[in-house]
Amino acid sequence: MGGWFNRDRGTIFGIWATNGVVGNLLGLGIISAIAAIPGESFTLMLILPGALMAAVGVLQLSFLYEGPFSVKNGTEAAGPPPDLFQTLALPGVMSYAATYALVKTVDTSIFFWIVLYLTKGLGFPESQAALIAMAYDGAQIFGSLIGGRVSDRVGTRSGVFFFMLAASSLCTFGIVTAQSWQVLLPVIFSIGLTTGGPCMLMHTAIAADVSSRTNKAATAMVTGIIDGTGSFAASAGQIAIGYVSQSSWTAVFLLLACTLAASSLMTLYIWFTEAANKKREPTLPIDVHADEADSPLIKGNKVA
Image 1 (cartoon, rainbow, N blue to C red):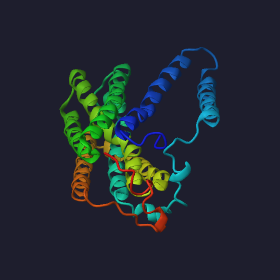
Image 2 (image 1 turned 60 degrees about the vertical axis):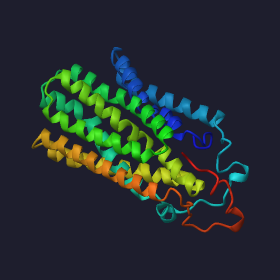
Image 3 (image 1 turned 180 degrees about the vertical axis):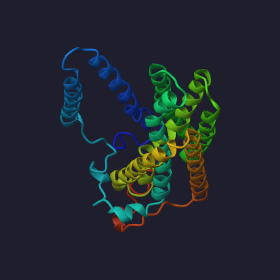
């Protein structure tokens, strides 16, 4: 995506990042339809998704090619990409990776545990609990679109993320006191709306922003670091949530709310740091040849 678009990344990646949520909803619909078929429905549940993935792979191999802003395209090439430690030294990589780890942990926790909380903790029917949980997924789509568009217009992603995550933290506190579906539905929708933007954009638009301000050849490595850190933290977080949920659901959501509050403070720190360094020329903590110093890869590819 970064090879095709070098402007309005928030909007573009906000739209693109919704594919995960849309895929979850489509997959749920497909599996539900297959489950209604008598006979070998379980086998078909495995074969059909596998066939769909194979078909998408063939389409990508046949028609997807490098965009005009790709590192591999003509004058944008800048030698070998930096290694892991050089990439970690790029401004913003470690701070955004740590922030995304917290946000991804909360997102994964709500995705996996909200239905169990509604059914076991509050006694909701499974069908009603599933519908309320779907509101979280649907709201994330709008959160990604709104967060991406607003961050492009105001010129800061970290500032937008701070307000969204702070609001999400307050909404998560609200789950503790909500008992009826009339209250839970808008609360859970609000959490999905305010976490959707940061969660979906940090490992997409932010990765492209960070690498384009420094070394665009590091885009894949930056994306991998941010995404990998978030996935590892989310996996480890589920172990903690499992232990805490055995004693109190209230403690679970208080823990998630505090995690979101910590992530909002981290984005506030990033926001202030970026504002303080706004007038400074971005630097590369890696060796750059003299003839590459004025390359658009290094200097001319600034973001909003």
